[in-house]
Length: 460
Ligand code: PHE
Ligand code: NA
Image (cartoon, rainbow, N blue to C red; front, side, top):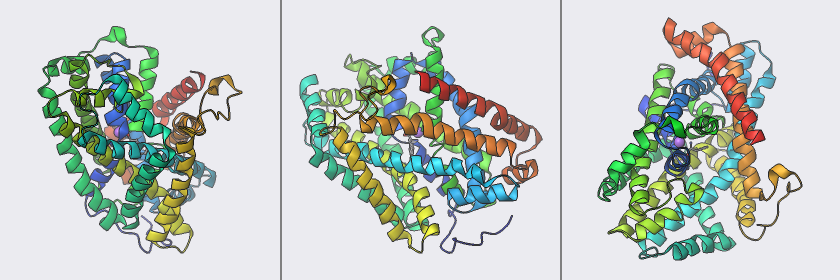
């Protein structure tokens, strides 16, 4: 394998396979697991949806993650440069790097509003610990959320805090920053989750949650549910954002990519299921609506925590968990962009992280304002499909429904059709049958599945 030649003076490697797994899992585990997975499961009827989702992870998510890690490790540069190098080596057009450009742009945009939501989690730690939810009613809890969204200053403060946490870690580099952060935060997150699950077992509704999550009721499954499962498999594994390419660029050549990708997917899924076991008993115990949608975490759960024994303590633990999950994801969103700035300019780590993070912070202000001052501003409102969508909504919509699938599709097509089979065989180190399976999935199954979701999301 050619050695990296340029732009990699400061480039190190993860100290172990585990370090990479923790970092990739830190990226994967986020609001998608703790917030989105439980509520889409609720909306789509429970067990049957979970089964389809697991299938999507296995046949689409894992193969695409392997493709992304392959490009990163084979190129050993920032995602765009890695893509260009891998294309060159395989006599393919450099234009394929559009996949990484779209992915990195998406990462940058997503971080700008992800940070705002991470800020909500940070502010809720204080609210829960201070007992602001204690004895709360739907109105009083709703007011706390409403007041937060209505205050640009408060949102800005928390957005700044969150972005500063992310910039701080990324500027300390691979080993002293990313690696150290995930080795502390990921075990902590896991323990917090177990504590909240343990608490959920005392609600008297744990069995109900278990059967809701694990009893397949295929009658409740719709076509829409299948497509939601597929889209979520993509989002939850942090695919289509050049993240796994950036993280893969620091992965040792002796590490088995397939086994590693499977480990990350399993950890992400375990956390999603545990989050379901933490949240649904509380939901059922309080007679709340399982399909309550996006409000579930910031409006419904605080209500439940506020009316349960030791709810302030467990509520605060829950929001610390949420902050940690969002923090490690935020780090992974900034890393590809910082890697790029570092290699493109003569700036060092800290300057690159501050520049990229600062620009992202500034863009976040747009999302903050569209929650209040600009809540009536709907730039694409003249099109029926975008009616009522604020700038925040549009950023979310375009990244999740267009940029991520497009980037993922291009990656799958590039790796499946343009990269020499020998090179893939050598780098992935799979035996004959496993290689053939992966190769067919990345060549045919993944692109077709992504196109179907893509079209569905555009028409729905
Ligand atoms: N994978 C994360 C989750 O499940 C979401 C995410 C998307 C994180 C993009 C980082 C980047 O919440
Ligand atoms: Na996830």
